[in-house]
Image (cartoon, rainbow, N blue to C red; front, side, top):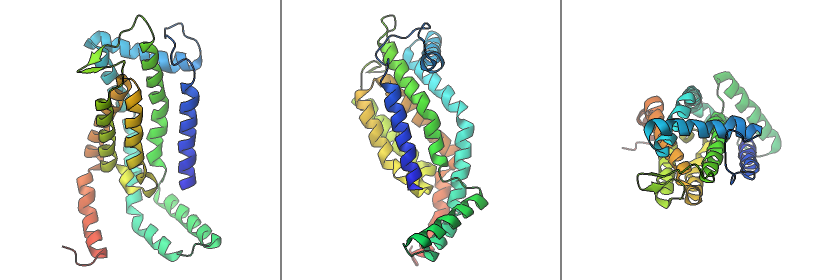
Length: 259
């Protein structure tokens, strides 16, 4: 499972690297050629510009586009949450399997992996479901990066400011807000029930802060708004307070009479 996660993160990193190495500092227009420009970057630029015309600023345009994207992804997020809840339900059986196959030799571990995958299949659990929204969002995130960078390099476009943040320049304050919001989202979301994904709770916020310090605030604003929407989704769909109520008796039983 860890190998799959490492492979997934590696593919995302390679995609980000390859797509970010070309034309990001060039002006953008409806005449820009290439699949990436025609079907990803320019549609994002056009949509942001359209909402800027309706709402008055590029900041509000970015917020509107972010909300639309997240609403489109809502069915996927619901599916992810259901899969994560099923993962939580099979945890007691996974603990029994680990106890049954304690030996670390190759044959025993092979049997463990086989029975674990059979259990996942029987219960309809997909351990990698938590990665899927990240994978699907990645082209959009890269497209946003290109759109903002190229809008910033187009003389006819002035991104202006949102509140106190110039959208064309990095903002440490906005970067830290985005990172903290990401941490809260992961703390209240399905990643907490998946041991393979729990490391992302610490990795993702640091990564977002690091990127936010050097990237334009317009992109960081996308992260902030996206995380606010994700937090609302977690509170409505995942209900983390109910998860704690359910887990507390199990924890007390396992640890003895803990009041």
